[in-house]
Structure formats: C-alpha cells, structure tokens
Length: 184
Image 1 (cartoon, rainbow, N blue to C red):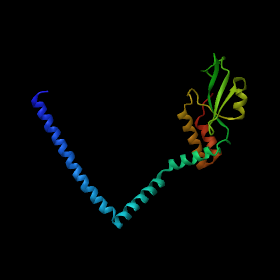
Image 2 (cartoon, rainbow, N blue to C red):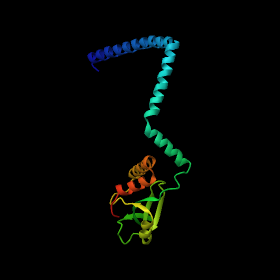
Image 3 (cartoon, rainbow, N blue to C red):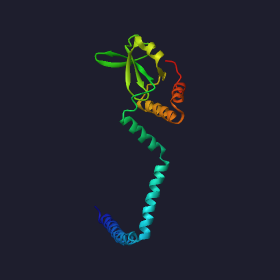
Image 4 (cartoon, one colour):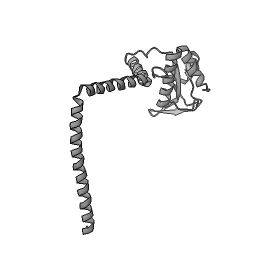
C-alpha cells in the first residue's frame, strides 16, 4: 500500500472512531434523560396511554386477522367437517408404474377424477365411470383448463366463507358456482 493511501485510510479511520465515540457519549446522555423522564408519573401515564391506543387501533382495523383467527379456531375444533359439499374439479388422472399422471378430462386412459371439497379441502377420487353420477348429485366448481393451485383453492375457499359469513350459505353456494361457470 502506498504511504499516501495508508495516511488517507488512517485519517478516515480516526474520524470514524471519533464519530463513534461521540455518538456513544451522546447516547449515554440521552439514555440518562430517558431514565429521568420515565420516572415521571405523567410520562409513565403517557407511555401507557399510547400503548393502549396502539393496541386498540390494531385490534379495531385488522378485520383479516380476526377472520383468519376465527377460521383457524373453527378448523381446529373440526367444525369444517360438515360442509355444503361443493367440490372443485381437480383433474383426471391415471396410474402408470405406481406414478399418478394427469390427463385431459376426455382422454380414454383416464382412470379417476379428483375433486376437492371447497370447505374442508378434503380430496375425493371418483372413478371416471362414476363421474357423471357424482357431478349430477353434487355441486361442482369447474375451473376449465386452469389447474387448481393451492393459492386458487384457498382464494375460492376464503371468498366462499366470506360470502357465507356476510350473506348466508345459500347465497355463497350460488355465488361460487356462478362465478366459475365453465364447462367441464
């Protein structure tokens, strides 16, 4: 390293060190002032009041948090096991060498269809030959060519539950089916 560069480095280092030491002194003074203020009854009351206000503001405006917490409590209690039996068509599949493969709905090699209960997220496998009877006796949400990803399923589910919460289950059932009217 050239002497000139070393000198510049040393000067820069010393300046930064002085700044850090100065900040440490300032911090010590500020911490002492904070301690004195915190011992004042009025300031303690102010700090407690601010904490209560912040807590109430967070609780008042976080509707999504209340919704999700309530939903998780209901799921934990097993209350989502009784459903409206609305199923999302998840595709047609066949098994080859112990591997499940997805095929088009009308592909003759298809062995079974998968359906996911919109509320419980339970999956059913229905043999292809029983497909029409199953779909005739249940509410099925067809997604057309879209593959129902977890995100899409949870989005549909949450929309259904919100609709049920605010408008009733019958309206929610009709809405989820009419929003997704596509032929299977």
